[in-house]
Image 1: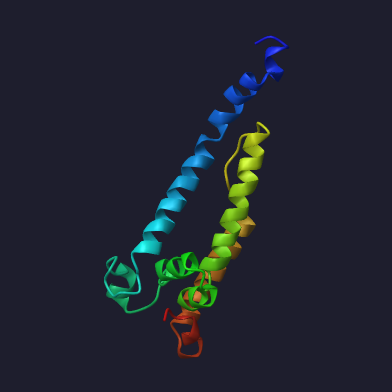
Image 2: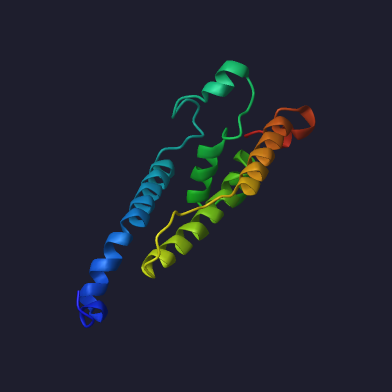
Length: 147
């Protein structure tokens, strides 16, 4: 590549477009999942099967109510989403922000993952999910159980 080639639009597109393939694939997969949950209502019992953890133990796992929460988000009902699973709406917001930042980094020619989580953040998230799971399965935390 010559010095003048580096700054032509064709050279820029040859460099940028392949780097946007992974973010584009993630966006397509997320949109397909959201579209499916928009069209097919998980509030109907058994419409997507049953949570194996709940079937075996009778307890709510941290993901129970997640598909109902996404369904409610796709219909613009944030309150109903929070009543199904309080973690889904904030997680969706975090993922959208992370995806936008990822696209920006890729557009500038930087490589890297969408989310890089260190050991402290991983421990904090896993701890919060453990506390959430325990609370939603107790009488005083039943407000956190899916509705």
